[in-house]
Image 1 (cartoon, chains in turn green, cyan):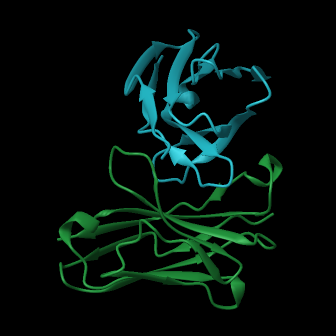
Image 2: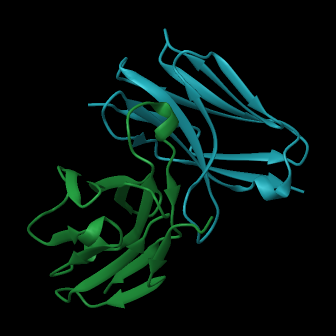
Length: 117
Length: 111
């Protein structure tokens, strides 16, 4: 099966500019996640979608970050305006969703490395 | 909320030796514990997982043990090979909530 696709792979922007990342999950995966991974740290959840609805966005800095998942498939994550501390790898992951450990397994994309200068 | 600690942060072993990475968690409601391997420039990849009703699970050279009483779980890699060099993350998932990842361990296997 095809994996989780993300683009672009790399992005360099100046602070205060805006940027958008795109994710296409594995076909049939109802749950989609966006994670932020700062260098040297584990991934931190930003937002979770179940189909096209938001399940958890408690750690999303909503003053500058936004995300959408139209039609319950592809998703975009936007940062506007970017700050220096937003430099990180942004990972998209998807899973079948549903109750129970059998549905817990994530598949991650390769991520987008953002550098804010 | 759940908090996951991971040790050591870096680990170097000789090729053929064993490597052990340990994680502790705080929430007794956590019931699923995966381990992910992240190679340079790639996203994390699931390598093994264990559920709270199991004490040990093995897959070829990789094994995971879980001690629910002490709230810790460990990854064991035997007969290490250069391709095992990567960053390894543990995670815990409380029932009904999302994963919380540890900070990662950079494993280097020296030839």
